[in-house]
Amino acid sequence: MIKILLGISLFLSCVLWAAEGGEIHKAEDDPRVTYEVLKESPRCKAKLKGGYQGHMDFIGRYQDTNEIFLNSTEYMKKVLNIDDENEMVNPVNFPMDMDFLLEGLRIGLTGQCNHEHRRIWVPKELVNGGRKVFSEEYIPRGRDLVFEVQMWNVVPNYMIGMPNMFKVYDTDKDGYLTKKEIGEYLVETDQYPSGPLITKLVNEFISKDDKDGDKRVSFEEFTGPKFDTDGSRHDEL
Image (tube, rainbow, N blue to C red; front, side, top):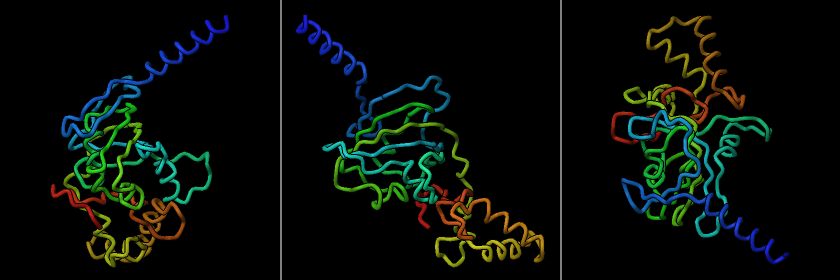
């Protein structure tokens, strides 16, 4: 009886394991990148493609050891100086038409639906490009990687055709926006005359995006258009 029960248990475990594993697909743009749909979207309203941007959470692992090297939620909390483990943070926001993503990950994400959960295998030769969270500081090079991506939303990339306002404001090119820089921009562009109104607008501008309270706005904190969108796919500061 015990042997029978053990046999049934083993059989059910195998069935459940097989049910959890999905079909492995080759990416259309490059078959070296493969992916598995872990959970389909209950209602696919939009698929990620050129001209769109996605909002996602992801975990990055080494393929050979399965060790986690980056959790996007932890990254966002580090950037915003959030110590509370229970505090919610926004997903990573990225455009498809700029050098923001790793090349292999961009290929693997193409066609992913809103609310779809996907596992993507990226070979080391395509672990290149990318910036900020996808830079070499956070994403290791020279190794095969796997990403588990939860896509929350897919929307048109509103930044296409808009100027990189972070570059415009950041006149001293130090990677931060200050009250002085914002005030000078508003006055020099003849939007407002110098005076109490400028001070009020500048304070509101800084306080809206200043997540860490240092009285200035970093590139990560800035919520306005901050990527070059002239079609060249170069978005460096």
